Length: 532
Image 1 (cartoon, rainbow, N blue to C red):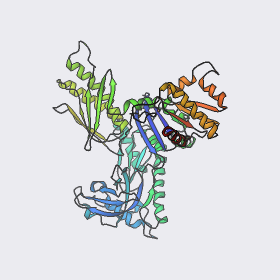
Image 2: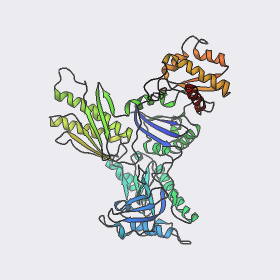
Image 3: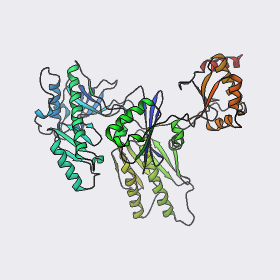
Image 4: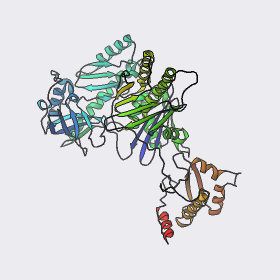
């Protein structure tokens, strides 16, 4: 399996698409005006306790207070609490975690009122982004992630990923990390550490410890809480850190600044592979070039077709996500009902695993597969679903089919689910159901060019059109196409860009810098004339 990362940097947002064998399996969108906050560490202040919920509301500087549940305090919270109290005390050498002794673990069924009081300052880390009307979800089990290791202050154990199959390798890595880690620091060894040289692991461990020490020094520079001590890297680099592996074939990005950031990161972790980062500079939108736009249009929405007429219906409610599997006209002649059912269900399991990652569905998912009688078929479907979900980085749990043929899945919800509206409102009629004759669309385009050149005095611009319309404007022998006729007539430099994101009779004009040209004034003038 080959992996490719395609990054589309726009003025308002960054879209990150992960392709496995050219199929879109993950999509992340991040507004450029906001930042990725999961992993950020704060010295924060407790605002209010909720004994009925066994939780606390904590101020970390967000509009909505953050939520800290008792189980998220972590077993060594007493040490975290003592360390937090000493951080703000001037002149006290309290930054050395190794100088503390680890107290007894807190009881699993304890009460939050026994450990916290309003106004108390504590170290917390954002575990989940704010979702809908809820503030961020917090944890006091602090961790700092690297490529091979995850550093856990206030713990003293070494954990090795279960995905490293060899027990000999696991024991070897565990013993090696135990020998080099500082006192009172726990370490999680990630799967990608398998087969890595000791020197590389040791260097990363020292780098993570330095990162932790640097973030603590910020406390002395601030006077009041909340204080942001550690800021997680941008989503692009953090996703790359979590998923980067030898199967990565290429990383494409269409922005010079982000390209430089990724080059620097890849060069720091795998210098021999820095040439896989490539700057995309073609005029065609990057998602169109890699057929991502088409996959987005076909993969989001209530109904998703996946093979020979079979399809999924995905509904979202307040409490859960519900998926119905339908065979459509998928039924082979000569096959009995059971054979058709297992064939459709296995294909549906493949598509469902992709949909969960692509939409980032979290919480409870209930799937109504086509009924099957044979126990071995039901087990085969369960095994297929588990196998498909192995590449899913979110924590999940899959239950066997119930007697009603329902499969229940729980999947970790870290951020809001990905929703993309695939329905297009006609840009020429704005959903009214009627528009000007399509044969006159070319005349309307020429009017826009006339307005740009003669009224706005813009002589050099780009014109984005639906690929079918762009092909029509470009058709013909050289110097005989509509585009060349317009160039000669108006003395303008016109560059044509086909875009699959546009509706059939939609158009966008861009200036030399790639910014959209505002034609609002012209549209208002047209409306005024239409009422005269």
